[in-house]
Length: 630
Image (tube, rainbow, N blue to C red; front, side, top):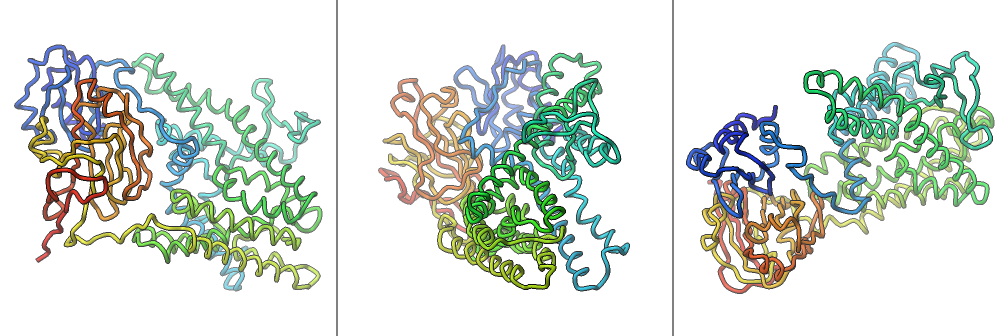
């Protein structure tokens, strides 16, 4: 039950009840009902209802104007109506494939960034205190602190099962159950193989040769350790979300409560351990074999490839493919020199974060940078990757390049690690050559310096925060620049009460002369409706802007609108956001007049229009005055 459940009930009641509703969609500000009989709706009750801005009737739709939080109200209204699933069309999947992938990965990891950074720092401090001989690694204090720091990383599938479920639309507790099942000791390689001979091997003549210790009713299960992994549980939860939706369609309501989760788990876990988990593992194996082949050709090139791609592998959890090679080399050769170029990435990432700290004017970003820098130096870079570098994109690319530079140096000079264990700077003692020579540890320090210098300097030179200004104070004025070329007209002249009355925000309207919409200020796209007709922007200095191209143009269902950005993108003033076909909109019978509104105007002193008449794109159109603190 959502926070707008009571409001949703009153809305449904006053549009004539669920039996009067044949369809419901929403645009960026309005619930758009299709009613059997509009005369049964209580217009005046709805207009004066707390949480409703006004009521409009247009194009055969009964429109209840809500405001920017209309999607949340929509989610609470839909369960109260007897509508088929296809009554509310899904939003279009927009944007590049890479951008969508980054959005999914970031969305899954974002909720655990804080605790991930905290755990990484705990592990690093614990190792430091042991190195300083304040206590030993066998004492109870060490073990308890290590448990606090290491638990998240050991049981990462549980945490990711929960967050991935929320991202994929699965019930979060069900996602948690999937993650827990994948960490269950009885199916981990280390548990099932303890003191036992494999039943047989599968794929024995290939690089994917794997022992089989247990089967699933005769079907061999390739044994994998899923604790600490990433991709297998994400794939499993994604598959579970599809199963849940399928079962929800066919299971009777009377037994859905327990039958749907039971069947979802019963299908998901076997498919995951039989197929999804091994596929992710085989992907890791391919990567490690490819790296070994390159090293045989050129150690410098191999080191550069490991350093360049390591952070990308970390994102998808495929870096685990190197672990068997690493362990085997140390145990059989007495050292590892294949995986170790990744060591450069830890410090390259930390240096990029530190450079961002010096360059950014974003207070929140500065607050994140210091703990993420410390966590990175201690060997845990995930908080920095998911919390800062990946969302900003260019710094992530810079960190990969800097890691490649450091990795190439380590590969060329045959950098080695002789003892397993340690993270970040606390790995350095394990890089001391057992014969007492200092050459390898000097290479380690030189590589750290090279990686950090490359990361820091490249970021300072090439990363620009889109000329992002400091956040303006409440007393300062702000300027909104025209997003269109055209003619400025007062809002009061718009033939739409929701806009003309100022109920949705204060500002001006523009009659466009060309079909290109530009960003009116630096900021972030807070919403871009799938039909492309309306966009919300949160500016860097605190304004929430709404630009609505045309009146009732949502009914064109995207025809003639061509978005160039998507929700979540950072944009610069003057950047193209949208192209639209003016002639097609007018031929369809819709007005092209475009309101430009400051939605959160009540947080400021006022909104002043620069003047009416012709305006070029990027000419000042609104001045938002600051509050007088006196």
